[in-house]
Amino acid sequence: MSKYYLIFGGIAGAISALLEYFLYKGVFGFDSMAGVIYGKILALVVCIVFGVVLIKKLNGGISFLRTSFSGLMIAIVCSTFSGIGYSMMHYPDGSFFNEAKEYAYDEWIKTNKDNPEEMAKISEVKSAIESRFTVMYHSALEFGLYLVVGVVFTAFFAGFIADRNSLAG
Image (tube, rainbow, N blue to C red):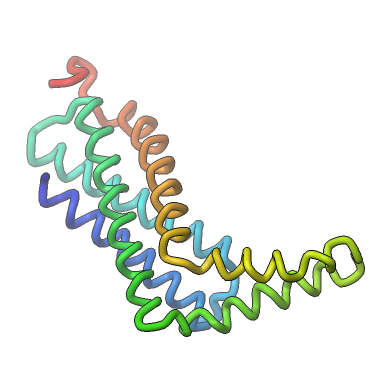
């Protein structure tokens, strides 16, 4: 594995973990999960661009497949680093997320307080919110997100940066 995959994937994963930490800690006024997701995607895309451009400069050129593979590997490493950061926030007992769970639960109640059918599902919703803050759920969600973004963006980016005369060389 190229060290550039580790470097750029690690940077994107560390940024991802920091953005989540800021969200759940309330630092810098972070209060929007959508903003954090956009930030994670932007960090991954920027790291893929810099990583692929660096690999192209060092090798004197880059093929379509090498570009795609590089972006995919950076996305996988990013997912791993982000998962490690999330696991560290869970250490030792997951109490770091208690406020976030309460916030999600309160928001659900505010949204559905006038709907008696939804209010009958309170215990199910509480357990669903609890399950969203597990390491396994987060890791699977992040892996899927980064994999899709990495594959789609890299395939698009490869059309611009890859050498036209070489598909796999």
